[in-house]
Image (cartoon, rainbow, N blue to C red):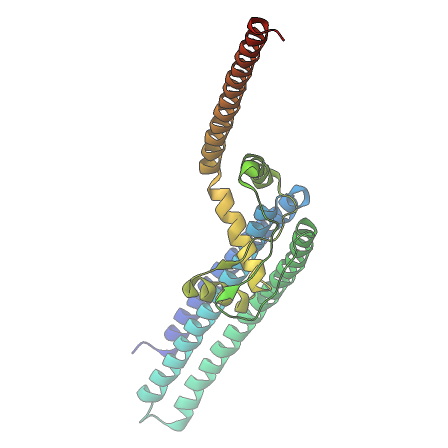
Length: 279
């Protein structure tokens, strides 16, 4: 085995390298959160606000996971070195072992100091993210203030109410939906639906993870995403509906002409009969 000094120095370099990597990651995430903070000032679209909220939560989770991973790796390296020292110095004088273990304690202190520094930086990052999270949530609440939620127990059936829509109105509804995809806006609650159990479990997992406050909030988000992703299809449907409506209007006009012509002929025949058979 290499000398204790060599092993300690090797692990010190590893500690400095990994802590520097984590610090660089936090700097990048700080920068991105600041960008999102600026973007959010003028952002009004409901879906994009949600995207920003999910993104900063993802940045926070990534930083936390990376910190845990690095800490575990480094602590394990120190523990492995301690085990090697005890095995290598098992037959050596006690004083020699104590000197080696003292060097190991200094290494442990060095690791703790480096972790404390990055912990402080991590706490500052979390504070910034949580503050921005609250601001984005408030803005989302403003955008959805017309939503009416019908909270139901966690069952397979989710019931939401909505005004009945007549088929002739669908063109204007699609128009409105497409405009809302672009600029956001108040929405109404949708009709009674039945979702697959797997979909509900996924939404419930997101609720448990804190991504959504409630099951209904998750459903609203994914419903909006569905409309947004179906924009091209909805435009095509609207065009077809416009064509159908135009044909209906033309057919109606032609029928009115035919009916009017038939009525004129009938009146003319009746007038002729009266002239042929005067009283």
